Amino acid sequence: MIIVDGVIIVAVFSLLIRYDYLKQIVRGLTKVVSSSFKKSMLRGIYERCQKLPEALRSKALSFIFARVVKFFGTAKLRFELMTPTRSIVHVRNRKRVQNHIGSVHAVAMGLISESATGAIVGLNVSADSIPVLKSMHIDYLKRAVGDLRAEAWLTDEQVVQMNTEPKGETTVACKVTDAEGKEPIAVTMVWAWTPARR
Image (cartoon, rainbow, N blue to C red):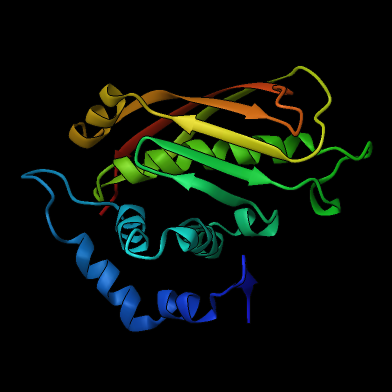
């Protein structure tokens, strides 16, 4: 049993991972949004989670994402927000992700940046495309204090590009802040998408 903010969410999670529910998600992916755009699996899951009470949406998305992207779960990351144009990923400063000086490890900083940017790319590419991180550049500016948040966002033009072009690449904006509201790192994340191999 899991209690979050006074709400028992075991039933919600078991519903989300039931076999027949997952079959419905996969079936929903075959529906064509426009004449040439099919929703990605992540988009289908996102839309189903939007039917949950608002307080449970990000928790459900984090739970499902951690089941699919194992490293996300291992580091105990969570989504504070996920929309088609914006996402926020949070990591607590705990032993599991700390470096030798007690702050969030450099690799964990990269992980939250990759997760935040990758989630919104995954929401916007079609089911016929595979999103891949092409490059990640990180400048470490200062020691991080406490928990970290990575906020990523897309422009309307980037969304249209991902919805209409079967292949492409774009730099996804991302800002990482610590518990003091300062930016311990500056990141540049370039994502590409290519047609899925049959």
